[in-house]
Image (tube, rainbow, N blue to C red; front, side):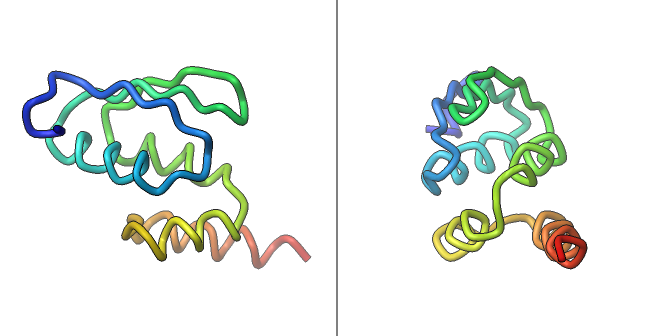
Length: 89
């Protein structure tokens, strides 16, 4: 789907790993992603993996660990999340 799409439109509940994988595939192919992030009830437009990482960093550690078990997340996100958790004493 990511290969033939002009852009991606994703309704994401903030937990589904399939949605995250599709966003990563689209961004790797330089496609724009429009995502509705249900926890915030907002739409976001992404053109780079960095922008997606910023959104994913809003998820709690348990959700990120679950996503990472199902979909390989960018290393930048894993490092950022570990640093964030270290400060949440």
